[in-house]
Structures are given as structure tokens and as C-alpha cells.
Image (cartoon, rainbow, N blue to C red):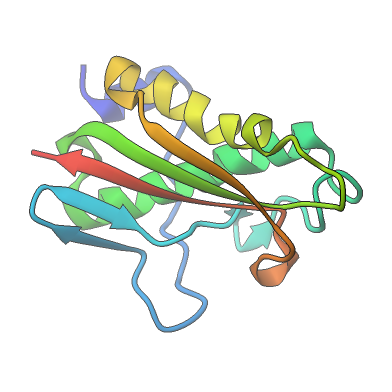
Length: 151
């Protein structure tokens, strides 16, 4: 089954690639790897939520936001090389804008990781970092970047 078919089976559609907010491109290929830029939880040009996780944003809402970030990263990959050329998800890096004392970053970034597992099966298993940060662009609660291997 193709990745596009799997997305449809899951009731998911890749969004339009989010336009860069500064001087960068959404994704770059080098050899058989594609690196995405950090993706925010933007849907239809709006952030799904704003603020720090643990105060303004619940961990569950942030987990949903991480899922949106992952879909945006997949859209960037699709636009560059075609989503069906992905053979493996190699690494996920998630940044979580964290309120003081919030230590649930891994649970938040699970939103992205679980989506990738649903879409790619075993090929979606990946190395990962989940990092708490003070601020993210546009006051986003989460940002996700991917490294994938392509055919």
C-alpha cells in the first residue's frame, strides 16, 4: 500500500506546504536523506494553539499540535520528493515551549511519533529528541522537524 493510500485510509490529507517564516526552505535533500525545517502547528494559516505547555496549553492539546507539525513536515517532504519515496523515518526532533516545571516533553512529542507510526508502520520507528525550550516562533507551543530516508 502506498503512503498516500495509507494516509487516505487513516482519513488524513497532507496540507499545503507552510510558507517559510524567514530565510529558509521547507525541506532539503542530500543524498538519500531529506531534512525538514522545523514545522509549527499551522493549519489554514493559523496556529492550532499558542502559549507555553503546562499553563496556556494543555499537554493533550500540545500533543495534537505535534501531530499537526508532523503532517506539515510530511507535506514539505511530499512537495520536494513525493511522500511515496520515503523508505524510513530516521529522526524526529520536537521542541516544546514549556512553562517552568513542565517536564512532559516526551508525551507531547509522542503526537508526532505516533502519527509517523500510523502512517509508515515499522518504517516509522525512529530516533528522537524531545526538548523543552523557553519560546518558539509566533508563540507556538511545539515545533517538529524530521529526517527521513528516501529511495
